[in-house]
Length: 314
Image (cartoon, rainbow, N blue to C red; front, side, top):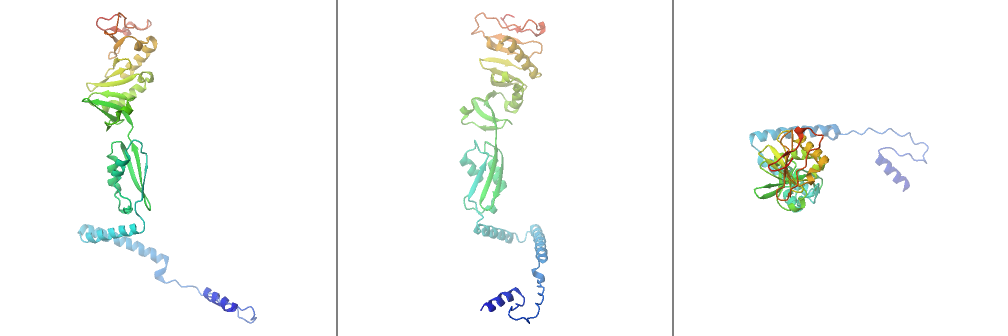
């Protein structure tokens, strides 16, 4: 029995089994090289695949130009989709990154896919456009992670200011785009702006204020005047009028004047910086009780001294 088993295994291996008890057994013959049929060789398969791809591409181009076979192609496409779904290529989960303010329900509606839908037939471009149409979404990317997951990556807008326009307020981002009118109480710390086309210029305003951080912290609102310059409203009810040209230099003069005289803590209503050689100070006529407007420091040239408003002292 052992001898038969050994031979069967040997025969299966393709050679002659030597019987150890038979000393006269001839030497083993060399194995015959196995011949692989031409149609089963790897090179042949690769060539067939390439040829089929070329023929399919040519056929697709021809049918697209001729209009013939469109129904056949669509039928074949959906048969392939159904087959992929049968193999488990269906949407079972949606992963989202970057969502902070975007509403979860609105995002899922924009993604627009039901659990179990074929993942290979999902319209990614359409989903991207729908997601980017949401108020908080600046950019979006939708991808598949086979076999069963959609990945949605979003970049949300950065709220920058609250724009008051026609008795209504709206949150805007750093591009001036409107985000939402709801829940603005959460953004009360942001600067409020007003004026036609103010959102288009708010980026420049904040860059200007960044040059004087101490003053920036005092600015509560700003008005875009005449489509060319800003008026600032500071904490304490002081209005600062900036020039159309040279606003950074004007703001630097105000910062230096405040450091030297503390003008912003005095009984002042308006600081007019529109003139490059002087600052016009108007006192609060309602609260003022004979207090004089602060003078420029003695070492400043006469051309830089404060010019009084009507009825004010120098």
